[in-house]
Image (cartoon, rainbow, N blue to C red; front, side, top):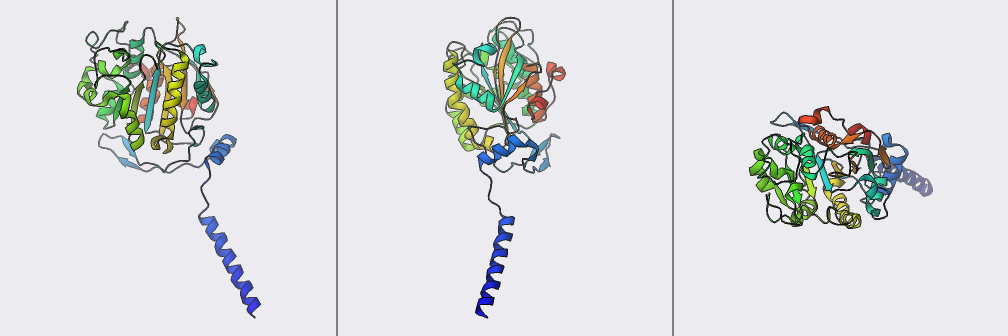
Length: 338
């Protein structure tokens, strides 16, 4: 009789353990998520995201649970997501072939292979400043030089103003800038690479949200308080304007892993776009690397894109209207599964 009771108790215990395992399966590792995503992106689970009304009429999105994103392989880990944070990092004056395929840029090339690469992306014009204005305002506003805000006060709308009106936060992180929204060039800081300083309608916001990179970006990453839109500008050396591709690659290899390891990216709702202001000659072909949880690893998009396409894509993701030439530009979202 004791033997029969023991058998019955063992059977009950086994059934209980099996039921518990089915209810509370352990989370998959980052490696297993990456492997399953590569094999079948549509099978990757996604988080349900609740929406609530916003006074502006736009939707606001509840923060999803953190995903198991490996910063070394940050892409292809989700089938779908709602991007609530977009970060641009702008480098300088290098054509596509000076970076992609170059032994001087090992980190950038590894990132392009792990994530997405636009192989037919072009600057709008030459020199630098009109490209920055085009990407943030949808027009070059007739600017053909690199003069400062005193010479080119832009009384027009911008993505910064759009986000302010929508109740969404933006921030520019300008490396080596002496003070907030500084309108004067002070090498290695270049105001021509700081478009927010040119738009007069956001002058007050610029004095608060256009900040030196040092300290501010690290703090926002550590606190998980990246804005909806972040514009990151290295200084004149680290953006490769005055220094080598190798120097810029080393700078990116320091900062981008920190960005991808921070909670905003691990939450699965942050897109990072690395681009250049301009290349060389009339073709103006430049590298552009797209990093996001839904970007399938190894994606190469051959469709023609430019800075207006980047603006359109960002406006679409953040739910604001399309400015200027962005309205007729191609969206990058389908090509990169955003």
